[in-house]
Length: 92
Image (cartoon, rainbow, N blue to C red; front, side, top):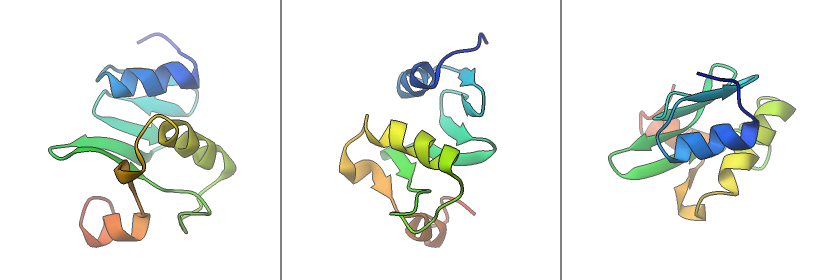
């Protein structure tokens, strides 16, 4: 898997391909900032976990930037608050 830019990793994730750029990686099914899953494809479609200050789940500036990149490529309906995702058992 060649090294990519963050934008290329996002596009690879959206098309189901593996890629990595620094601390942003995808196996084609899930998108990770460091080792934190920030988005994934489910049977219902794309789900983005809002690990940002506005989503009340701030982790780091870098993770917030990674989440922002994928949020700009998706519909608002694809974005889920982290607390709701935990209650639904989607993430820990």
